[in-house]
Length: 190
Image (cartoon, rainbow, N blue to C red):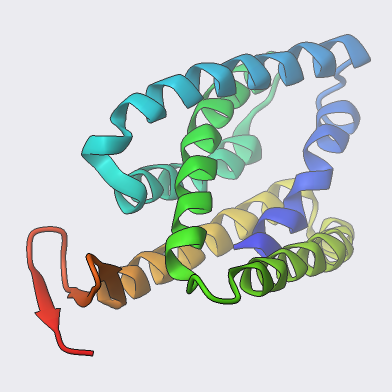
């Protein structure tokens, strides 16, 4: 997931300037749109948290986020980034909420700090390696195809994570549950 994000992340604004001719002002406005959308999204997702839960929000946001670089791959005008950033800020707000809570629920109480630190180490490693891979991909195939590859990687990672999460043992009320689907939860012994 993080590697797929990072192969494209540094290059959206470069593409916006080099290929679409955006100015610094346009980049500033599109960034502001993203931030405002994220604020709205935090409130919206927060209100639906009790009904959807971590995995529900993750499923929705995690399956929409791969679409964003696909849209980048087909846009032709700088103003279109405002639409992408409106959707992106909103959806990323839900993803961030769900991802953080899932991370906490997946890690054991004892040693949680170590597990979270290991996760962050993996994120930072992807943040280091991804742009290097992205630069190579841009040089070989251009921005648009690299955005498509990022989208595919994001979608595959999301699908794998959802599949793993629906089968993982969960701790609840002092017992372990195995989640088979949203509707069918069965208890299993320790």
